[in-house]
Amino acid sequence: MIIPLLKGLRLTLKRFFSRPVTIQYPEHKREVAPRWRGIHYFERNEKGDTRCVACGLCVTVCPSNAIRLVAVELEGGERYPEVYEINAIRCIYCGLCAEACPVNAIKLGRNYEFVDYQREDFILDKGRLLASAPKEV
Image (tube, rainbow, N blue to C red):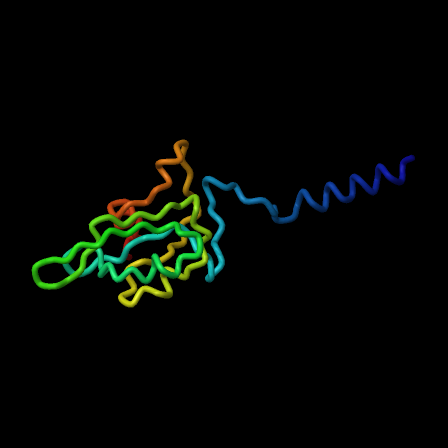
């Protein structure tokens, strides 16, 4: 009866003086893997607008049909995405949209903290995609 008690006490003392294995989550965030695919964002061009040329390749390759694009043509012949939306609930984060983009406009970031209460808030429009771009250091 006393032997199991001493074994338990020895294990407790051993763990008490060792480094903790838990992470205090909100204060300390875990580093994600280099291949991590988080929430999408748009890269900006030199004018500060989206780099997207509305070619529609991302819409074509998206296996879950999570991207909606309405393109308009400007006077100079350039195409521009008037409406660009990604349904973050429907998206499977495969990264094919980022791979297919010829101008590297759409990318998947490293953010994994993306929560909300309404389903409509998971529709990422052009403004939200531009705003969620990582800050340059």
